[in-house]
Amino acid sequence: MTENQRIAELIFGKLNKSADDYEIEYPAIELKEGQRITRIAPSPTGYLHLGVLFTALINRRTADATDGMFYLRIEDTDAKREVDGGMADIINGLVHFGVNIDEGYVSPTETKGNYGPYKQSERGDIYHVYVKKLMEEGYAYPCFCTEQKLADNRTIQESNKERTGYYGKYAFCRNLSFDEIKAKIDNGMPYVVRLRSPGDENRRITFDDGIKGKIEMPENDEDFVLLKSDGIPTYHFAHAVDDHLMRTTHVIRGDEWISSVPKHIQLFKLLGFKVPKYCHVSPIMKEENGSKRKLSKRKDPEAAVHFYAEQGYPADSVTEYLLTIANSDFEDWRRANSSLLNKEFKLNLKKMSVSGALFDIVKLNDVSKNVISKFTAERVVSELLEWAKKYDTDYYALLSRDIEFTKNIFNIDRDTPKPRKDIAKWNEAKEYSAYFFDELYHNNYELPEKLNASHAINILTEYLSVYDENDSKEEWFNKIKEICPKCNFCPDVKEYKKNPNSYNGHVGDAATIIRVAITGRTNSPDLCSIMALIGSEKVLKRINDAIAHFKEV
Ligand code: GLU
Image (tube, rainbow, N blue to C red; front, side, top):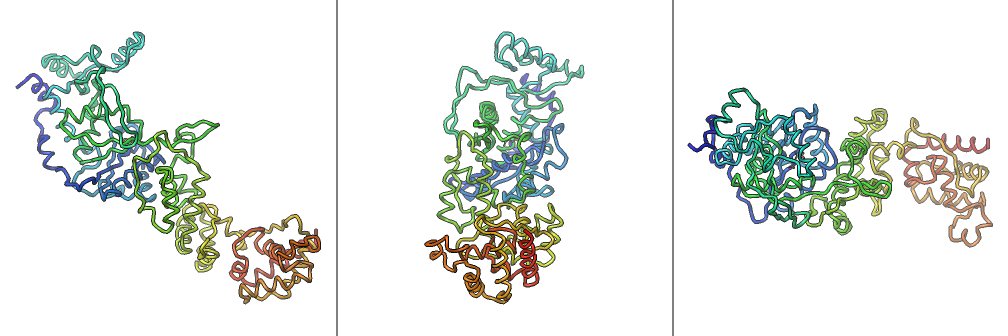
């Protein structure tokens, strides 16, 4: 036995399995040319963040573009920072927003696939096998330095204007002998396991990032920690072991990890693993006072994915919007393929923004209005009810009182080549539909400037005398035309424009007066359909109330 093997044996004892066993247990997956295996590997240290949803979507669509596979692994090596319910929130949120998961945790309680366990806290035995292997080969060693010693070391390095860290002459435990190590362990001294880095900071590594292109960095010469004193691996080490054994081909992750790539490539090589393709996603940015900054979990409510659920953005809208900021050609694709599902769009990593896409809520609202405008009334009602049940129970009660009526509200002007784009999110639906429900309707008798109360009284009184709730759209409009001359309104808009001073208004203005009386607004979907839907009782009452109001002013 070599000295290194003796140290490894001292630290880990006999382990049940070897690295070779794991190669057999988790065999390489036969992939078709170009096929990709991607993953999202969230830490349950908080709730689902837009950046994680974005990265997960990029991973999902990258796998889809090659008929590949996307899985979810839970990285729970930091128990202290874990948040109750964080894992369920993340997984449910991803699934809700259209990122379906093929393997790993497909729901908070269910896993699929043969490459698990998919939670790092259940993979302790596996990590130990690989650390032991590195130690036997001389690439890892136990380190007994205390927190205090490390802090003092940092102070010295800072005052010497040197790079901080555990490397070179500052890697104090690097050359401890078996006997020295044994004595410390026998004394009960706690220790971590560090990499014995063969790297040299004067040499450089290059790699071709799938999003950012060629990147060059100094080699890693730091003896960074592989196993913490409780035997739990660090992110760096777990990443290498897990992404190898789970056969990830593309590691697509946030670019806060880009500076760690030299460590990761080094680990993959020392462990004898094929290095995956790294793709670093730039963070979503926000413009503030003319400059760009990262969307912040603390400062920006829209950074939390809950925000979108609460406001009632359909999942599809959020996905479409994220695709818009992911690939600049998505919008052109969407214009050319307006009826296709966005799943058909082939995401291209090379077309992702390197500097960070800018988050723009106005744009999100536009995208969402467009998405909702293409929904059938059934879909609107089903998504709206689901939202209202959770976030506005009074409105839910109104909507579910008569589902057919509710469906008809949202069907007005929907089935047309140019459907209206009034609603961006479900929390706007209540205001949009208010005049259909007496409980929500607020009269507002504000007329456009050129019209006054006496015009309104005339038009409404005349209209009452001809109104018939069974009128077709054509009859309805003809009647409004018919009453125009009696009130000195012009039944023909073109005619009116030739001589506006001779009239009080035109047929459109007459309709506006009726619209204001019925809906409290100067702009609404098709008024004839609205009147037909709310029925004669409400129509008559609202017109009479309006006449009474205008008589008082
Ligand atoms: N657990 C890491 C994180 O949440 C994952 C990074 C990765 O995708 O490798 O940042």
